[in-house]
Image (cartoon, rainbow over all chains, first blue to last red):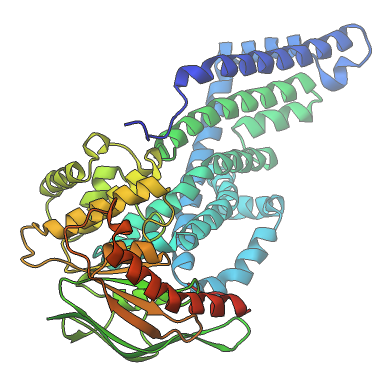
Length: 264
Length: 274
C-alpha cells in the first residue's frame, strides 16, 4: 500500500556511516601520531606522558604473557555483578515508587540525599565491610547503577501514556495484566535507553574500587603502575579499559536497537 | 431496551487554584440499544468528560449512570472506547494489538490470533499483521484500532472524535467503514446492532453518521440544548448524503443552535476542558 510510512533503506545509510567511520579513525590516528611526534621531537618528556609505541609494546607484552586477561576478567565480573544487582534493586524500587505516589513521596528526600553522596568516600567503608575481594567493588558499582536505573524506571512507569492505560483497561485488562502489557513495556523503553549509562557506571565503580584497594583487576594494574611512576603502565591500563568499554558499548547499543525495534 | 442512561449526572473537577470546575451539570438522556447517537458541542464543553463517565473511567459527582439497566460502578463492561489519540500499544505488532482484547479475556493465543487475522482482513490490513503501529499511516492505525475494539464485541461503542486527526479523504473513508461495520452487525454473538455514542465537534460528521444528534451547551456546566432525529435513510452513501435537502435543512436548524454555543464558548475566558 502506498500510505505506508517511507523508511530509509539500510543501504541508503551505508555511505554516510562509512564516511563517519573513516573520520573517526582519522582523528584517532592523527592524535596518536601527534603525541608520538611531540615525544620524539623532545617537546614533551616521555617520563610524564609515555609514548604510544611504548604503550602498544606494553599491551602486547601483557596479552602475550596472559596477565592482563586475568585482571580484565575480574573487572568485567565485578562490573557485570554490579550492573545486575544494581539494576534489579533500582528497577524494583523505581517500579514501586512509580506505582505509588505515597511511597515516592516518602522515599524522595532519602533518595536525593543518598544520590548526593560522592561514591569515592564510600569505597573505604565498603573495603571495611566487604573485604579486599570482588564484593567491595561490586557494592561500589551497585551504588552507581542503582540510581540510574531507579530514576529511569520511575520515570518510565510514571510516564506511561494515560490513553494506553485507559485503552487497555477498556479492553478488559486486570490490574496485573495492565502492569504486564503497558507499565512494564513502557518502563523497559526507559530502562533499555539507560543501559549504556548504567554499564559505564558499573565499570567506573569496579575500577575505582580496585584502584583504592585490591589484588586484582584493571584498577589494581593502574594503581600498581602509578606507585612506581610507570606512566606507560598507567596509559596501557587506561587504553585496555577504553577499548573494552567501546566494544561492550557497541554490543549494548546493538542489543538496545533490537529490543526497541518497534520504534520506527 | 436502554443501552445507556444518564440520570441527572454532574461531574466536577478541582482546579489547580482550588476552585471547583463543573464540567457537566445535571445531564439526563437515554440511549436506546442499537442507536447511533452523535454528540456535538463547542470545544471545551465536556464532551470527553461525558464519554469518560459513560466508560466508567470517571465516576459522577452526583447522579447515576446505568448501562443496560445496571447502575455503573467502576468500568463499563458493556462498552469499548475508541480514543481520539492513538492507543495501540507501540511495542506490540498490529496482529497482537488486535488480538489483545481476546487474550486479556483468556482466549487461547492461537485462536485469538486467527480471529485477529480475520478482523485485519475486514479492515483491509491483511498484509500488515507483523508491522508495528509506528510503521503504519494514521488512517491504518485507526483501522487497526477499530478492529481492536470490534473484535471483543461489546454492545456499546464509545467514540471520542476518533477521526479528527485524519485528513479529509481518509476521514471520509473511515466514516464509511465505520457505518459499514455497524450496519452489517453480523458479529456472531450480537443479534442486535451495537449502540454507538459518537462525540465530535463537526456537525456535518454528526448528521452524516448518526440516527440522532445531541447538541451540548458551551462549558462549564454543559447541558443538552437540543436533540434532533436524523431523517436520512440507511444505508447511507456518505459521498452524496451531504447534498440532500434533508441533510441541508437539518444542518441549518442545528447550526442555529450550535452557533450560539460556539459564540458563548469563544466569549468565555475560562480555561478550556475536553
